[in-house]
Length: 244
Ligand code: ADP
Ligand code: MG
Image 1 (cartoon, rainbow, N blue to C red):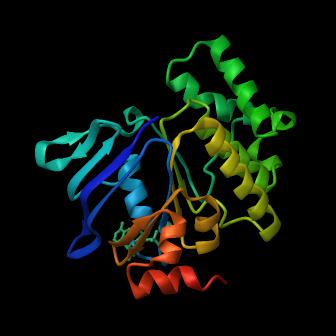
Image 2: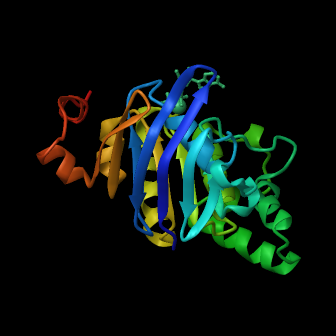
């Protein structure tokens, strides 16, 4: 299990600063929710963690390992950061079956054929999608595709799992069901999780720690109860206090 540390993380696009001197740290096994309104820099932060976006300044540590620090020229490639990411759009490979989708990251990571077969079977069973193993993504509902995307991400047992608004394309019933599933996956894997959402209900249901962002800056970091009982700013109070 791996702690995560952001140290004065900054991202500028041209003259616009979208992540501004963001520092936070959470212990191993945390479920960290980055919460804030649209455009506050949540996805950009996640993409910097994942290695999909260059960092302008600052440092990211996964466990005790620095994975990005432009000041000293450190930029560990995405595939060697021990991270897995689930995208809003699922991004399954359309020409592969469910089994092949979930097995692919294991093949890339050099798992043997036998180990791959066993791990894929285990993950598909865990996520209750074993019966879909030979289907292609086009033959699945949105909720099923999301389960496959989660299975594919956790199959290689990443130290840190990243989710960007994973429920936003699901209807209300599936949202509740998938939210419960994500909570269970977190409890069972113990992986440090970073979860981006603009939805305070999701944040309060899932988080061990919530970081409220506003205009690329950290407003407050703490356990949900602390933010509810002792909001540091009027913005935090307003954002958490008015569920839809
Ligand atoms: P969130 O996920 O919180 O909605 P984003 O991280 O996607 O916010 O975006 C933060 C800000 O950065 C927004 O104003 C967005 O328009 C801007 N932005 C994101 N990506 C780019 C890009 N590639 N070029 C320029 N601006 C960008
Ligand atoms: Mg976003």
